[in-house]
Amino acid sequence: MFKRFSLTRGSTAPCPRWLAVLGAAAVLWTGAAQADAWPSRPLRIIVPYTAGGAVDALARLTGQYLTGRLGQPILVENKPGAGSNIGMEAAANAPADGYTLLMAANSLATNNWLYPNLRFNGLRDFAPVAQIGYAPLMIVVPAASPARTLQDLLAAARKAPGTLSYASSGNGSSSHLAGESLKLAAQIDVLHVPYRGAAPAMTDLLGGRISYMPVNPAEAVEHIRAGKLRALAVAARERLSILPEVPTAAEAGLPGFEEAVWWGLVAPAGTPPDIIARLNREVRAALEEPAMTKRLGELGVIARPGPAAQFADFIKSETARAGRVIEVAHIQSN
Image (cartoon, rainbow, N blue to C red; front, side, top):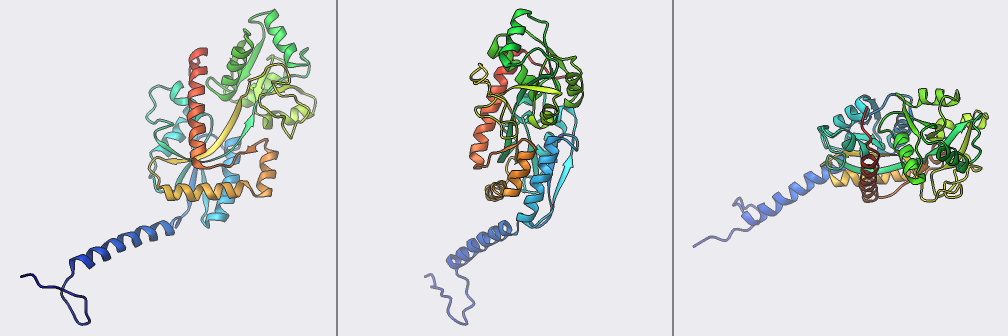
């Protein structure tokens, strides 16, 4: 017969059932302790672009607020090159422990279409954390341009096909896709002139060597206010608070033309869901702080707080949309 064991005082006999319960509790306690311990050391945000640009500025601003909320330093690490693929690949291959994040932008949605041999996938290899915000693009022309409105520009393009030109910051860039989207929406034939970055493109635009350019408002607002550029339309449903006099594309006679640059934090796929949830809460809380909202506005960024699932759906839709434009316009990487 089997003996009955009990955990009475002084008993030293084992009890398999109670040991199993205690063992399970210990595992749960250990997991909870590990979750509560995060973060126990500094985090890093990989920026796949050079220091000093819009993505870098947003990463540092976001890191500043997260440092205060998480109680750990947030280090920004710039890893530019290969159309942002070097930084994105480094983030995709980082340990999925919540200590490495990527400040993602439009290239997360476009690069798998533009570079078919990438060793990572923008949808498969990242876990969306939170969108930071977006900036609708504007169509701007040099101050000396005869085009006073968007319809003036489109009429000139239709009158002399192939003679007008638009600048972009490079093949596959957000300004390139916006330029091709405008061509498709307005049914015009214009020449695309790619540059190696927004700065040289802006130089030629200001010099009148380019007919127009789709730009991030933050890159053009000072030139517009100084009278060196003229903004014809903003590719959004609403006017911009920093340039309220600029009409939307719909108001300018081209409904449905909406283009924007966007930014958000993603983590390596497999990052624990509780860490993703905590990061999302902290980012959303930071975006609701008046000082951060004000600073984002100064950068021309519209804050877009929301759950991680919403950001995931947005990335999927942007990836599909970018693929359609890239295929129809036959866009290739540099």
